[in-house]
Length: 264
Image (cartoon, rainbow, N blue to C red; front, side):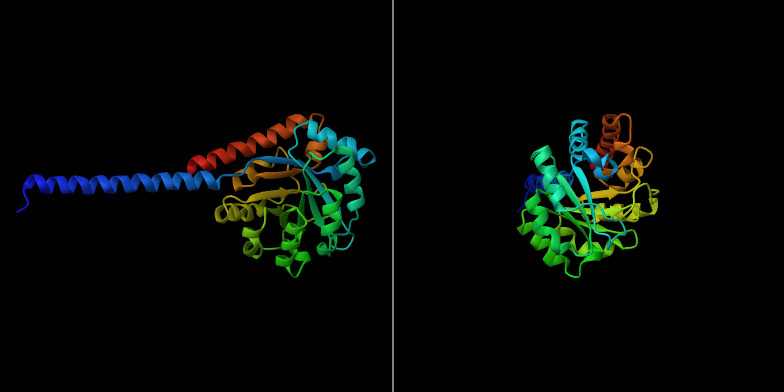
């Protein structure tokens, strides 16, 4: 016959086990949350906004001012109307600035498959191609990785974020364009921010980049939406004090990341 005291002991042991399970679940949730926040604020000046007659020294200047990476816009005159530079220029820049700067190649080209190996050989670190420019993103992602580069996938303002989603777990970075690609100096498109928010909610650890019209006046919207990689052209390079602008952009993004982590 079970005594009252034995019954009390059993209930106590059961409550202890339940308490331990709850604590373990909370610790696991905290660990998962911390892991999912494994991204940081990174600022990448768009070097196309610099004085192209002294591109090497401009790249060095941006890195000395605190840039985390350099954003290089490659345009072929087909995917977008403008024409910029190709892998020979990238190779020259790499020799000029050394191995340290991270080159994020924004490939606004109609045949991104054609330039993977040349860009890798020239010293590119990340190959960001447009979803709209290829019929086989999976093969292209595989080819980029095999060439030793990180993979970025970009979408134009008219492309839905759901079209990018099937590839999000296979890439290192998603680029949400906040202007139409191909021209500098355009007005920031705030209505692109729901794309960023959706990506951040669905893929918490993904690097998410925004490009176009981003500067001190628009950075808060980008940061609050969940972007952590910030491309900024004239706002940084055209500033009298690029170091202060880069620091401001990074601080706003870092604070938003910290707030998001605490909210979780």
